[in-house]
Length: 152
Image (cartoon, rainbow, N blue to C red):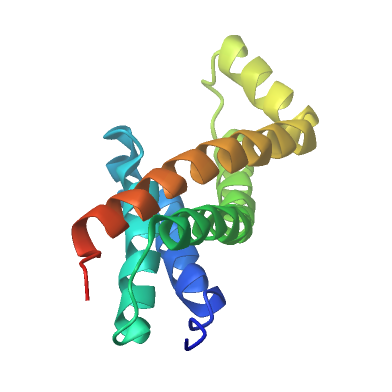
């Protein structure tokens, strides 16, 4: 029996899809539909993996593992992209605060809260994303096997 191909490259591709669909402005709205971007990333990992299988059968454990790996990689990729976008947004907000005299005190207080607790909020976001991405990546991987898997 031939050994199965490596799952890491398909998982990276699925994770990149998750990261882009979860982070890039406007594209990230797809996750408002039951985390569809994360499900698509898990499905993509299974799709890419299925192309490398040849005559071997795609099984549910493959899809589950690929979905989970894609979800974890998606969190890492999203964290990198969020850092880039976050630095840019912080600079824009600071410039807006310098040039605007009409900022309500409540808005200024909220911005100061986010600035003071930035690292804690960032870690909380990563922890929540990890749970969500793993669960919905798993669902996408299993869905991919259900749709793409066929008896060979």
